[in-house]
Length: 220
Image (tube, rainbow, N blue to C red; front, side):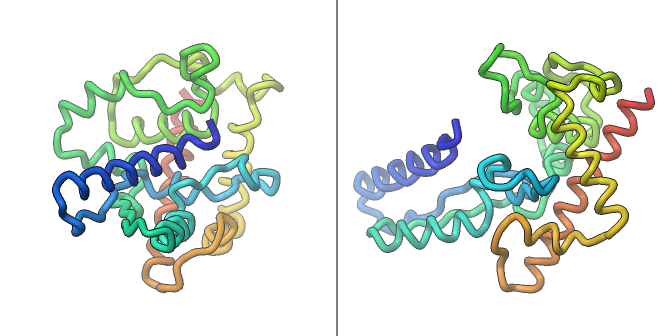
């Protein structure tokens, strides 16, 4: 499971190589990686969430280094994430075909624990980001979750960790407003000041989406 994103990218490189050979067109080089900017950066919610606990397999630094590795081995490709500066909620809300996206959302899977029971848990970080984005976009029909309401989750020792981590991050960043430092904790970031500011704004808006969803869910 940890290596699946790398496998996806490797399959894309294999695909683009096959297209080049079939069409004899070496100009084909772009691989689109459509990941929302918040999860792409995936800044650690707490100090414990380092390393593989918070995967960053579409982080700009990772994609850049993978590009460099592939270039050195003869595979000249370019990874492009068109949603690097969009939150997941913004992606849903700005989708051109709203009828299609509203049909697809209930059929899609985001949960990191889905493979255990073939049902999304509703309380892991990917589920929280997903549910916040659906709430942001005003989509009323979503997939079923094992944990439907989060209000009583705080008493559940075995399942409350991710929710508490998100709440802790919201409180900490409200007190410090130091999103730039938080951004850097996810790994090396581009030198371009404009890009850094856009990334900082993206993770700030992404966490704000989660906060608004939690406020609505817990207070209702």
